Length: 313
Image (cartoon, rainbow, N blue to C red):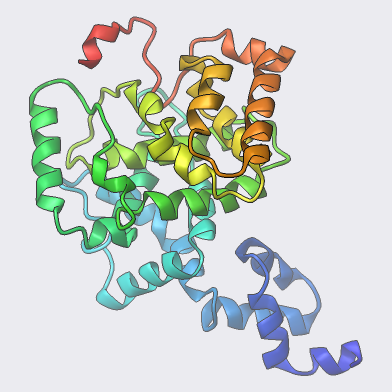
């Protein structure tokens, strides 16, 4: 079939465009007219309409909602049809949703709330494991007790890692994000924000008020076999999984050899665990790794310079 004949069939060209990643579907509008028309249809009426809506309206709504107590980035801003559109975006392309959120404007001045926290609150209302969670009242009570006890948020809530809790779906979506950033240096800010989004969603996102304090316990707990260890075992490439871990602050709190063995506990594929562990240790021993780990970590989960470990308990 000739190119001219293919491009002369708008529905066929649109189906081709809808098979592209969202960012490529947006860029293809600058190509020849048949693709420009097909991309416009895919973004306004086709498969990518929910993603386009999130891309255009999500960040503004999320930022506006943070000042409310409790925050309500969906019900306070969008109609029922628009909320359904946002949930459809998460249902059809969760990895693309996270990539859009990771592109939100980062904090530029001290004291400004980081966009990974804002995105995590928005995700709290998108992820159906939280949206329909039957024991949400129990969650709110536990978090309120923690907050009122002046300890700050300490632990990820246990039901988040259940099959209906959303953690599995979010880590699977992060595999896609990680693959899109795989050629970016492992400690680049864009990759650190990817891990920070997960950490924020497991903790501060579920408070009705923004907690200033943040415990470094999150990284210890998320690195356990029942949390990230179990989910990273499903990733297609164990080296990609290791790079994801390196991008966070996990190695700032735990030796690479201990961390690798801890996270791969229970992995059925021996070679995968070996490759994961080997890459983790090789990076930690490299000049890049030693330089990165020589500095006090910063960002979600990292203790301030005057941090007292006893404050976490």
